[in-house]
Image 1 (cartoon, rainbow, N blue to C red):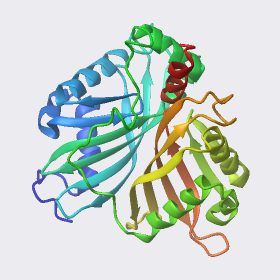
Image 2: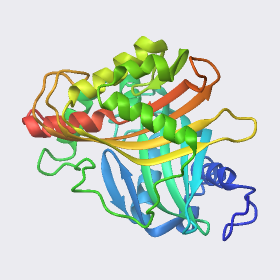
Image 3: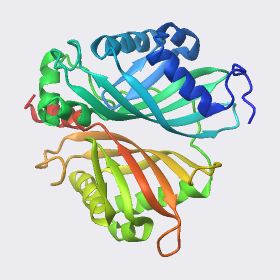
Length: 331
């Protein structure tokens, strides 16, 4: 593959994504963000929307000050290209870190953490100019001894209360960036999109058809589970909390690469009211926006083959609880 406009030291696009991540975080080349990130980049996470490279640099330094030994191990880069020269990487990372100093997570706890991140980054001509980032906040705070809801409540207070706190990502706070692509037309991405669309349409009977009986599932909160029942419980718990919310797939990628199983990456949203009993407790009527990213690997088993053998799903539980608490006035 030719990387037009990219530094020739990168052999392909995954090499670029994995390489600059190591340069920035582990090699302490934070200044390289001046050339790898566009000056007016939009970085969306469930917790906030940041515009501009200066904000990204400040947040990177703050994280490394709090977690100085943080490592980011790239597990996979599932990517696509569009006809404008943009490439989009859905980069799944396993991060380890020690909470060595005080910061956004409170006083130093000394806790050793392990959690996942998935970042969708749009790049063109050696520069990332649009990003969607989900960090498994639920896993982080649980390893520090917090409940996700209690952490969200404490964060609201530390940020100055309901009126002054940082507002989570919603359709109203989102900012349109330069990347307009929606992925590719690969059959594996389409297969995964159809599966999640059926599940979110209350068609949970698709799970034994679409998942392998021995599937391994990595869920928010650092949870690992296996099998049909675990997949059903997870997706049911999410959908039951927001039964009238609109499910929308923002981006879809499927890939078949040498020495890899077929894979897919989806970025999706669930937007609507917290009007049901599920994983987020008693219904409150809060308007909630859930940003999720999911990866899947397919295997040969199942009725017609091509079932999901491994799946990784990330959304930020603390950002969901923050929206609920701000609505109920319980912050």
